[in-house]
Structure formats: C-alpha cells, structure tokens
Image 1 (cartoon, helix red, strand yellow):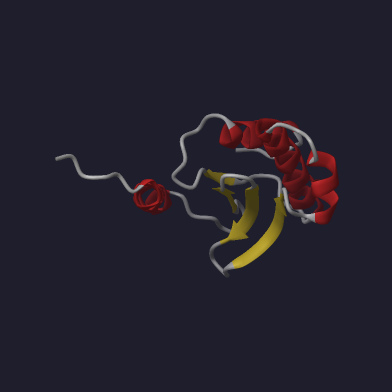
Image 2 (image 1 turned 60 degrees about the horizontal axis):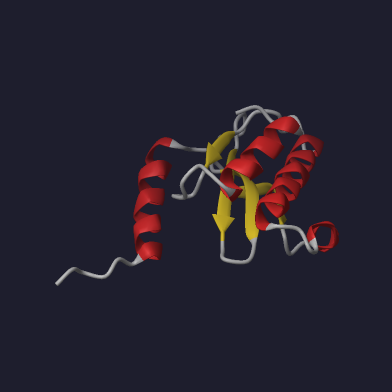
Length: 122
C-alpha cells in the first residue's frame, strides 16, 4: 500500500531547503511568496532585523478592486507589480527571490516576472 502524500508538508520541506541558501539582507531583502488556493501573498523581508519592508496580496483593499473577476495568474501579476512599486518606494531595488517551496511556474512565475518588469532586480 502506497503512503498518502501530504502536499503541504512536502512544500514546507522544500521551503526549508530553499531557505538554507536564500537569506535577505539590508542590501538585498528577500521577496517571499505564499500561494493559497484562492489568494497570493508577497512580502519583501529584511531577515537581519526581521522587518517586512513591503507587502501586497490579493486581499489588500487597493489590490482587491483591481483583481476582481481576473484569472489567478493575472491576479498574481497585479500583486507582483504592486509589491515592486511599494518596495521601490521604500528604496529597495535589488532582492533575492524566495519561491516558498512552490514550483517556479504559473502564479509564482507570473508574480516574479511582473515584479521584474516593475523595476526590481533579482
């Protein structure tokens, strides 16, 4: 009998492996992604002091109006653009990308590409 796969546990294990190498500093903070079934969240984090410098999600009031009735990949693009604009407003230009244990495709890739187009370097 094959053991049942716990997808969330497997993602968390992958995330631990990613976080061994990815660390946000004051010069290059970490862009962290969390993807749920219905929403996507992004944070720019300085791990040295544990501060969140910028964040955006599909639940933010300003973003929620923009993403209404859009497909999830398009919602991720909007969130990527918004988080990049907020990071640039706080003086963050270069970041390291933390995909959070998710595969780099679909919504995660769309968010990253939108953040790059909005001016973030990673």
